[in-house]
Length: 289
Image (cartoon, rainbow, N blue to C red; front, side, top):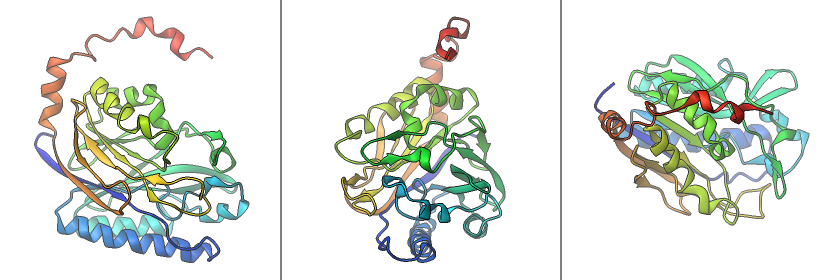
């Protein structure tokens, strides 16, 4: 799909006190994002991605069964149904990361993909689930993803999703490239003092190694129940050459917009023939236990 595609990223902060009901927390988060989606529509954004589990705070900072109440079905839950209506009315494809209920008690960290006509295209479930101090107790909440590394053919571009901690694993990033992704979105929640030095290193490297665009999203500011670190924002788009072409603030909520020239993918791949020169027959040891 050659030509320019205008894409957007939303970085935000959950400001509703965690003592409030889960319904209010979710409602406030969705309303905040609806305003930013309208801003994106006013700027003619064609594909828009929100941050990891955007409907509330990054609750994995504690282990509490209360947060199981944030789950929703995909695609039949209220948030995805609302976003399908918005995508159709704004002619905007949406990547919508929420906490997914598959079966009772079986939950995933998931992103639904909706095309610009409101059609639900499918979902990606986060594969790599951290469980480590301080404050990343994700295996308490999520099963590892089991849907592979799908690429979704929107009307505008072929897109993939990789969620937060996934970005530390180049194997899935390569699989998305081999599956035909032109743009890979990585909605995240990551804090200063831990991975910030990797933030602008790993994902531009994925873009270069696989010849696609990357949209990396991070929250901003402090949130409860996580109050031992600050989300450092700096959401960005980078090109298949690894160049950051648009970047958000370190500490302010907002929308990051970039025009991505998909013709650049072919230009880069015809110079750096990484897919041609791969030697998969030599990589067997990489998948041994």
